[in-house]
Image (cartoon, rainbow, N blue to C red; front, side, top):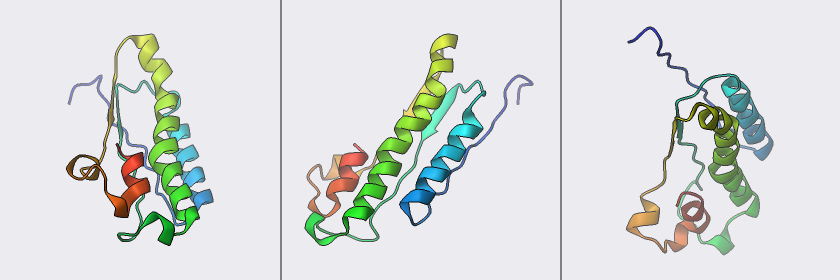
Length: 117
């Protein structure tokens, strides 16, 4: 590895409740602040424990999924984007899901598919 290249990871574990998800995301953002990030890989995911129709599941589970899969990605990206723009270089990779390509209208994963498109 070159002397001027450093690898750092900022992990955020999405626990079972929405509040823990927000705290974990905030901690990841704090770890990224001040770093000169050249590559950001967004790979956070929360899904339902099994295939379920929208009307059969708990709305709070969907709120949590949106917080992690969409808002988490947005907040972490915003935390590093300004330094990338100022430097004039950098890359952001957002990992999606095969469910949005293989079966674009996947009724058992409605919310998940919409957050991972």
